[in-house]
Length: 568
Image (cartoon, rainbow, N blue to C red; front, side, top):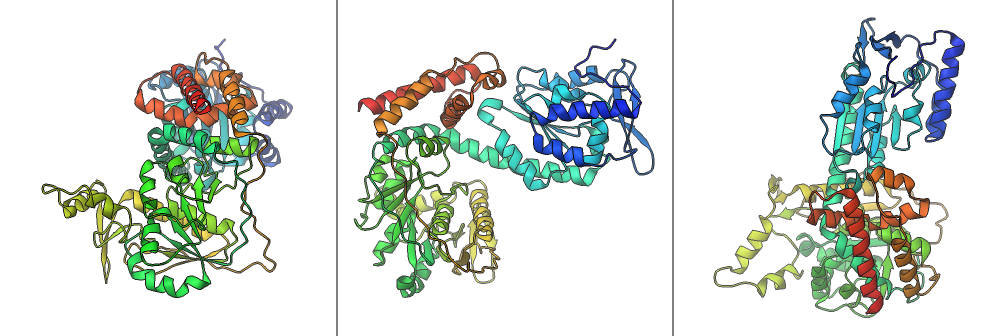
C-alpha cells in the first residue's frame, strides 16, 4: 500500500465519481465557497484527462492534447516521491505558486514543509478541474487554509490575489513551480500568468522596500500624530473644478496659465510645489503631504498661511503637522491607520498606493467631488536635466551646502545622476531624463486617471507626456461629498493604552509563522497586521533573523514605542 499524502480514488463507476466530486466540493466550500459554486455549475470536460495508476498505486492524471496524444502529468513510478524530491530544492521560500494542479502530489509535499506559508495553484479550464475532482480525493489540499486555487483567472485577478496573500515579512521568499506537461499544453495562457505574477512581484518588492526603510518611522509618527488628532474638523464643501500643482520644472512655464485660471479652480498644491506657488503670489486652497521623512519640513520653511488647510497622512512627521494651523489627517493605507480609523476615530481615506504625492492629490480631488482636474508640473521626469521647479526646497537646500569643492551645479548634477536607471528621451521640441521609479509613478497615475469619474487634463509641459484617455460624463444629480473625520470613540491616550494591551497579550510566537498565524484569532491577526511594516524594518536591519524571533522583536519594539509616547 502506498503512503498517502492524498487519498486516491480509483473508482470507475459514475456513482463513485459523483461521490468523490461531492466530497471534494464539500472540502472546497470551507475555504472558497465562490469557486465551489463555479465548479458545481461547470460541465465536466469529457476526455481532457484520462487516468492511470502508478507503480506505487497512485492515480495519475494524463492530459490529452487536441491530437489525442497522452501526456502524464507526474511520475508513473512514484509521484509522491517525485514531489518530495522537488521540495528538497527549495530553501526558505514560504510562498509557492504552482502552474497546473494535476494530481496535487507536489502541492501536497509543499504543504508538509514547515516553511510553507501560502500555496497558490493557477490552472485553466473549469470543466477540466471538475473532471479532476471527480477522479481522486483532493480534500487534504482544499481544506488547508494555506491553499488557494485560481481557475481561469484573468491577469488582473492573479496580480491582485498575490498582492492580497503575499506577506514577504512572514512568508520569506517566493518560488514559481510549473507543472511542465500541463503548462506546455496551454502555453499562451500560462505565459500570461507568468507575466501577471512578475508584475505583482515587482509591486510587492517595491512596497516591501519602502516598508523596510520607513516602517519604524511610520509607526512612531502615527502614535505621535494620534495625540494631536482629536481636534474636530468640519466638512469641506464639494468642488467642481480642481487644479493640482506638482513640482516638476514645467510648473515654471505653466504658472501664468494657472494664475489666469486661479479664480475658477480649487487649487491643491503638493507639498513640494508650495514654495513655488507662494513665491509666484499664488495661494492654494489646500496642501497635501504624504512623505514620512523629516525633509518634508523644508517645504514649509517659507510658512503656510493659517487659513490654508494641510491634508496630512497620519504617518507623516509630527513636525510637519506643527507647520499648519489647520491639519486634516487622513489614512493613506498603512494597516495601523486603518485600524485607528476603525476603532478610534473614522478618518477619511485617500488612495496613496501610487507611491507619490501627486497621485494622492488626485485622490483628494476625487474625494472632494471634482468633475474636472487640471495637472500642472506633473513631469514625472527631468526635462532638459532639471529636477524641480524654481523655488522648491532643493535650491536653498543645496545653496547652504555648496563649497568651493562642491559648487551648486555639482550638487544638482550629483542629485540628478544618482539613479542608475537614468535614461535620456528625445522628443521633437525637447528632451528629458526618465528613471524606472518616475516611469512607474507616471504609469500608476495614468491608470488611476482613467478609472476615476473626474476628467483629468494634463497641462502640456516639457516632461514625459501623460497618456490619459478618459470619456467623462458628469452625473445627473451630483451627490454631496463630506471629507471629514468622525467623532473619537475615546481619548487618544485611552486608545493607545488599549492597543498596547492587545499587543502585550498576543500569544507568544512558536513554531513556524504559518502555524502561529493559524492559531491567532481574528482580532489578533489584525493587531499583528498593524505591526508588519515595522517588522519589515527590523528584518531589514537583521537579515536572516528567524520569523519567531522577528515577531517577538517587533512586539517588543511596538511596546517600547507606545510606552515612550504615553509617558512623554
